[in-house]
Length: 158
Image 1 (cartoon, helix red, strand yellow):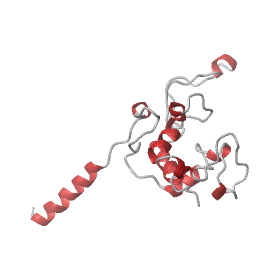
Image 2 (cartoon, helix red, strand yellow):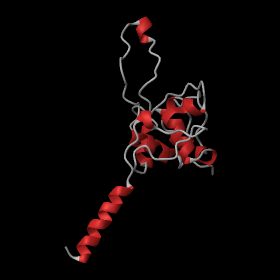
Image 3 (cartoon, helix red, strand yellow):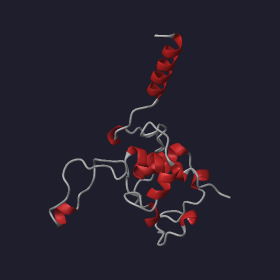
Image 4 (cartoon, helix red, strand yellow):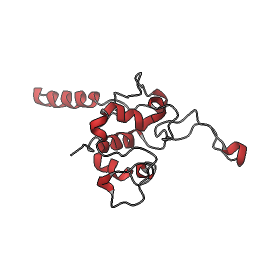
């Protein structure tokens, strides 16, 4: 192998090794305040996909939160705080922790835990007898959490 070819192979190996593995929902490490410092997917978030998740699918953040930038999408909720300027109020690690499992930071919050698979209360057993059993899939994938956080980081005052 030539020195040039060896250099390319070494660069690819180092770049691949630099990507962290996806963090499983049960392995998320929250700090004492509920922030999560490391990417859950091992990859940067895609703000454009995060913006889509704010209104569609499992994210649907605007069901509870208002975002002026998305005002063309009707029926914003008023249960949660306005998200305009959220990137000025919280760090990326804080937002990752809130999206992954807001209950760690805000005990008693109504916000769903978007990256959690165990520990749910299943009222369906008492009412319908059809509650899901076992572990559930998270509402958002690790990459979707990163995408939502990337979009939230674009929401600055001004």
